[in-house]
Image (tube, rainbow, N blue to C red; front, side, top):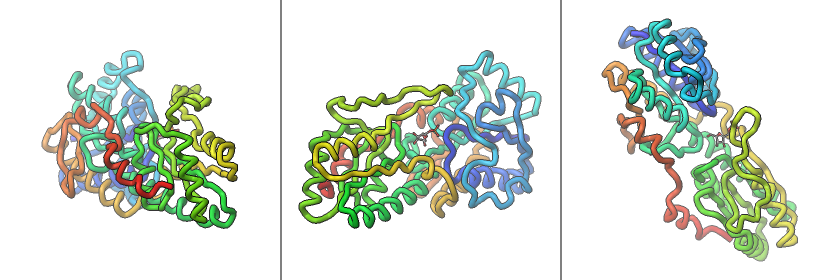
Length: 342
Ligand code: F6P
């Protein structure tokens, strides 16, 4: 048995831990061989491969990024994409593919498996934690840790200057990072994409914070939007690579706060710092277990399934269940943290 492995979409701390888990168990327990596909679905589409064996995975557990490279290539949008993938799988004698990715990468895996009979197993990955059917994706815990540390640091500088500090964290469609890091870091306002915010309300919270002699921290997800459509910057415009670019909402909000409250404000955009570097212990644990269970799913011929965390168990779910709908923050959960605002 030869298994192809690929990592697609935005990178995420823990990808290498998954790859290592897959290869170690696959080689040692089942005697399988592996081919690494380069840059997500671009690998099988263009026949771009890398050697993947025990020496290749040695020492990679704590390393961020992915030894396989990643891209957002969607083979279903490429000319003769499915045919080219099938030809390359035959050429490299691949019996099954493990796709490690988020909504887009796994959406492709689901269709290739369900509609075109290409045997795929999925592993859920995203720092955003917005994939359905799994309690957590790896990478999220690391990102929350980084954002929390940043908020802790921003408190002291905000207090020294009695300024508002707006911290923009990742999360295009879901506010999980903002919610968790905002709560853990004691932010005074948390704004998420799931609920449009009222700028006057935010300013009222900021003002009440100053009245209590504290400098406020506003934690905002990059996909959050004001209620009244005041934001002049466009949301979701495409760059020249066809990638969605977000709006710089944190910078915009800081300016509005200054204008409306007369208080000085600064913005910190954490950006890709949240995706880089070494994974947390939890993410190494989760990613490794996902890898071990993914290769087991291949052995069992459980194609079209994805490994998922439910409580402390790793289970198999249809990939299509994970990609059907984004897992967003429940309004009740968001309301729960509202007690700390202002
Ligand atoms: O989906 C993961 C993510 O990190 C989002 O939080 C973020 O909006 C996006 O990827 C950034 O993508 P890129 O690295 O292509 O700019």
